[in-house]
Length: 307
Image (tube, rainbow, N blue to C red; front, side, top):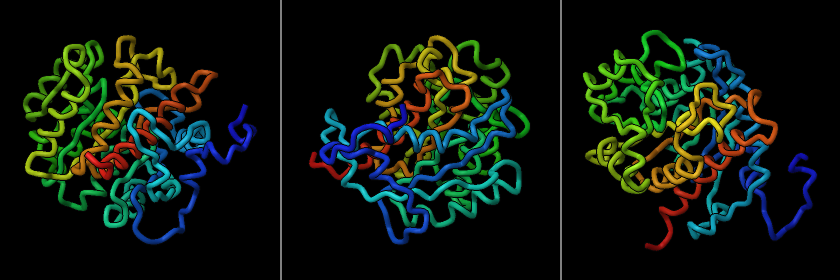
């Protein structure tokens, strides 16, 4: 059943109506959303390019009100910038850079919807505008993404080689049996702070989020947050090819997203590694991706809420 066939209740506004599709809208906004449907370099064959459209559709299943947060994201101005066409490869990354040029001068917070995890390199590099040395990065990911070559397994290595300081990179949720000794040693050599799955079992989400922000955002530097959904338990995200049993819960990922987006140092968030074409029939992975967009917006709205 498509959300469009649900009853229209004016007292229950849908998140899809709040966002709309106003790619030609001009002027400053609170939140900008852009699709970056990269998929060609995925280590596991993927149709992740189908995901941005599926996430926009799924937004119709949700309202704009977060009762537990005490915020209604309808108070935020938002614009959907559409999708970057063919964002893979050198030419595609140039198109991402062109699409995101000036985005942070217009929007307080940007959400990039993937696509696979390769977009973390192209989007962050574009937003940093040749000044990666001044930024920090937080990844919620089962993997280090420090592989050689160019793929969805290499964005963190590529960003560091382009100037991002390893000392301001934090990787949360790194999983056992999902990485090699060589890449774990590479993370240590680069000075990356790694917060593994075991540590997450022992500390509250808010505490871990604050620790990650203190490192990535040291000195008030702007922070980019990569939400690789395969950090979750596979039962929650069947549309993530590399997700394994034992990852974090969907609720934990949503909570992390809110806590990060609430911090004014966070300038951009991406949602990656969801293959809408491989999802369960109930669409649970895509629905979670849509909720991550909404949790990001709720975090931004909470910045303005009275203490």
